Image (cartoon, rainbow, N blue to C red):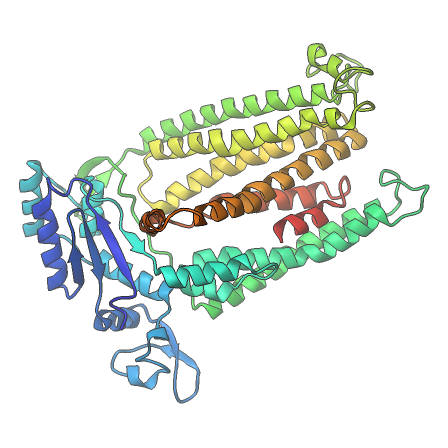
Length: 512
């Protein structure tokens, strides 16, 4: 029933050199009741229904009972008492993929397998107690990481739902196919977009519905809007916590402990563990701390570059005063650049409106390049170099670097104008131009351009489409950049609410 619906691919780049390893692995998997299809470079691994039932009991999956419809822990002996226990939809694709991955993780190497592996490599191979066969093969670079083979029909049907969901994403369908982590993001986007509506309505009303002699700069309601946004932000966080609890109970993840997964690229020296008395890979903490220091210094250099770019942009716009508020000379004033914003110059704010926007548009483009094309790669390289043992440690280190850098890069010019120049007018102008251009950039790069590319791909011949379909089996949904963009957007809306009340409305439109 499920043997042909879910599969993982184990790919061996140098399969010819390690053909005996492939044969031995395939034989061991078949002995463990897995179904294995082999070709020259890879194994296609599936599992029979009985293994799925056993794993579902081990994971204590909750399923509805026939008698009452109430969710209860699944057991193999009582499987007939559960609704649709013998139907294909009893387990959703995400559950099948997770169970199959867990089953494969439980295939551990024995001494015979390790000796055969050492014979093929002509060198010693050590492994930790917790490592599966696939983790060992990936760590010694014989095999690539396991890849889930997608069901193209189900995947296409789901993405058609997502594409045509103008406002509310099909969160449950996404969870059923991709799992809880991906569905959680879309659930958050649904919640966040819905909550933008009151902020957008109030902000847009304040921006456009007011007496003719009242401008946004002297509107008496601005302080009340700022207070409204403080309350909005407070309630948003509180009610979102309740929503996460709802998701957790709905998806039966409220008491699930995240499994600690080890990175195949982790390296170190083998030693006997002082706790388990088993052999383990160890990497000295002192060396990693030195690497943390280097990462900090590299990030600091990149932050300085971002700061210099910001100063250049503000000088070109004429936003940097010649003197500071104490009467002394302003150390950030660059006359060579400031002169381009003087009356009659090319970037004169009172002259050509389009030319006056050039510096801030360039700044927005440079921010995008620094964040997404340069520092994102530097941060990943630094985090790889730090040699973290688990995925959780790796992700935490990468998140810290990326968020601190991008938040600094996006907000530094606004904080400079607000707290150093103390100029609310220039702050509003910079924020409006910077944020609007960033929203346009997001719509172009995340909606319009992908749609155009998709249309062009449809014109290709069938052979090309089939080749792309094979490659897309290795696709993974990366949500990190999407989360980061939304967090930065949330900061724009809440931190600078009084300077740009229309930001919430603009965010709502760009997100929808």
